[in-house]
Length: 382
Image (cartoon, rainbow, N blue to C red; front, side, top):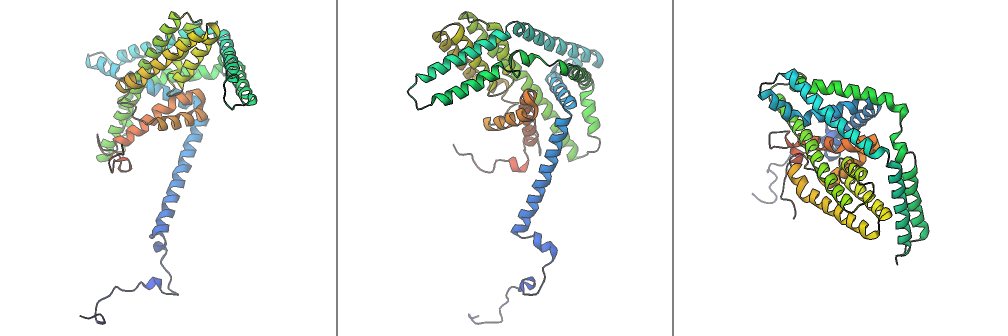
């Protein structure tokens, strides 16, 4: 067999590549550009569906928000309901006990917030505004190349926000929205009752179209969602209570005025990950700076940093490590999107929803087998 042996078998030439020969339509989508076009069309379709879902949710907030809150509360009390049923308590009685416990706890917390903030909110806002003015004067003495116009613009924006209708006494206004609030509250309580009483049955009813592996996957998704939501709420409430008690004790010990409303604000804002505790701590430092002296403000700052470090390095990994396995960047993106779409309520709900989405992906193919794109393909760089 030589180099010039023309009797060798060679690959058959591509007839479609010859001039004048038309390629079949299916071949246009089989090459690299065709596959890229197919994936692009799929992504566009998914984005259209997501945009449509988000639009519907924003138009039906009176339904979506109470439904989400009821689902989260039901998931948080699911272990308590399961324990009572194992002890032989009738389902209806267990439901009423859980519902009354939720109403008492939430009502008590809401009443404490109202009482603590009602009479001292204006003073709190004035103290924060004066603190910003003092920081402004201090910034002017720094040897940095920052113009007075830049600092003044930032100060005016912050003070305008604190004294505007979006904050302070105007934040507690909203008489025109009272009817919507009452309707949403009633709807939430009714839905919560049925979630507590018939939650597993409702999920089983929704799984009727599935069977085999699809049914097993849907059951895993439901169990994971309930476990993630419940663990998130219970862990966040515990962390918020520790933050509020720790910072509140320091404020009382240093004789900082408005210590009680500041501790309440710390507890409420702790339900907003990453930024909530920072905002509450900054407010406490500003009040200490105005009402006491810079040394007291520094001690309050040290206490806030210490409590935040305790929370981030000890409490959250123990209390929330199993329910919230999200990178801080993912939390920040979810928080920003939720705030844009739903305001304060969206900021509170966005992170648990993102945690549930990741939980669903992590059990898509099995108890410890995530969906294929989420599987670890190689060791992560150190």
